[in-house]
Image 1 (cartoon, one colour):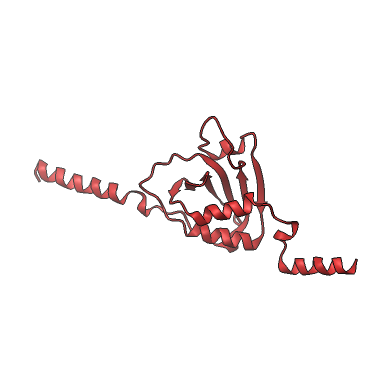
Image 2 (cartoon, rainbow, N blue to C red; image 1 turned 120 degrees about the vertical axis):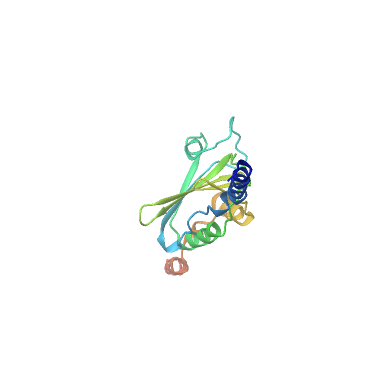
Length: 168
């Protein structure tokens, strides 16, 4: 084989690698029944920082950080579907200024980490994903919209609470 043929073959192998890129890398799908809880940490909307927050510990150590843990099956199911529908974004650079983090704790002890920029950028277990307005709407609704105390109750719990109030 001459030198020209080796260069041609090398070029095609390198080109195939570059153009396939991260397209074949996908985070593992989440089975909602395997999720124990979801931990969310977030900064208040519009919170300014001197430097971009590029990893989970920077978000967790920021001054106005707040957190919540979700165990509600309805919310876990909804979030799992949204996360499972995310698509990879192999062509984009991974410069994310995280404002919300999500740590999904599985029943087997494994965790999945997802970081969100403010209204754009999703980093799922180190893989940059395409932005999804539905995910950001979910985060807005769950983390930033005030809810009545009964919002998190199941229908059975709401009925029991109503019955209890009627007997008083």
